[in-house]
Figure 1: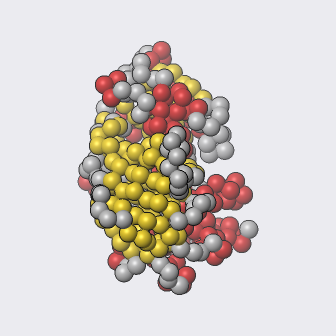
Figure 2: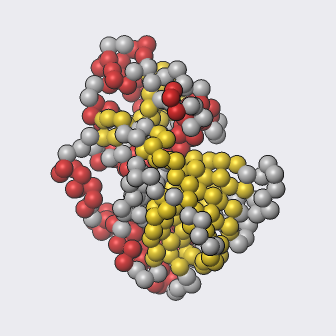
Length: 354
C-alpha cells in the first residue's frame, strides 16, 4: 500500500518521547512520506508543547484525511480524544507510529511485530490498511455525582484500577530513574509495587444493567485491546472491533506469594486459569470505588475519580492496521515471555533495588 493513500496528513509528535528520539523521528517520517508520495506539501508536522496539546491539535484536524500519532501510548491517547471531537463523517483516519515504552494500542494493530520502536523504520505505513475499531467512552466523576462533576475521556486500549494501575503510574518515575522501557520496565515496576503497595480495592460493580454487587479486587481491567503494560495479555481474546468490552479482575484477599505468580503469568495470558481471576464481556460497566485516591489509569494516563461508567462505542475510530501474513500473526500470539524475562533479569534486579 502506497503512502500517497494517506491523503492530506497531519503528523502529531510528542518531541520528548523516548528521551527526544521522537522529534528526530518526526523529521525523518516527513521526509520518508514526501519521498514516496512526491508531494511534500501533503504532510504537516506539529509538535506538542504541553499536556493535552495533542488533543487540541487533533480536534482541529477535520481538514485532513489522516492524523499520524508519533510517540508512545500517551500521545496516541490524546490524539484519539481529539479525533472524537470531530463528527464521524469528517473524522480522519488514525495512524500510529510507535516510538514509546508501552505501545499497547500499536500492538493491537500489529505494528510492533513488523517494525521496531526506535523511529527509524516507517515501512509498515506502506503495508497498512484502515480498519474500523471500537473505542471506550469513560464518564467519570466524584462520588456525590453533583451537577457538573462528571467528565468524559476516551480509551483506545485499556482502563483499569487497583494494583495494575498503580504499576502503570510507577513506570513513569521508574523510566526516568532507570532508563528501562517496555516489558522490563513494567515487570520492574510490578515487582516493586507488589513489594511495597500490595493490597485489595473495594468497589461496587454493575455490569450491563444487572444488580450492583460488591467486589474486593487486586486488579480490575476493562479492555478494548488484549494487552496493557507493554504486552501483558490481560484479556488475551479481546478484539478492538467486536463491539464489546473485555473485563478481567482478580479477587482477593489472597497472599502476595499467590498473587505474584498470577501477575507474572499474565504476560502470555496464562493468568486466566487461576481460580482468583474472572473474565467476561459486556457492553457497559459502572464502578463505584469505596475510597478516594485509588490508582486509575486510562491508556496509561492517570485519572482521579470515585465513579466510572465505561461503555463501548462501536467502530468510532478508523486506525491503520498492519497487513501481516499468517506466520507473523502466529508468532505474535505464541511469543514466549519467559525468554524476555530471562534476557532482562539483571536489569530488572538493578531497577528493583534502586
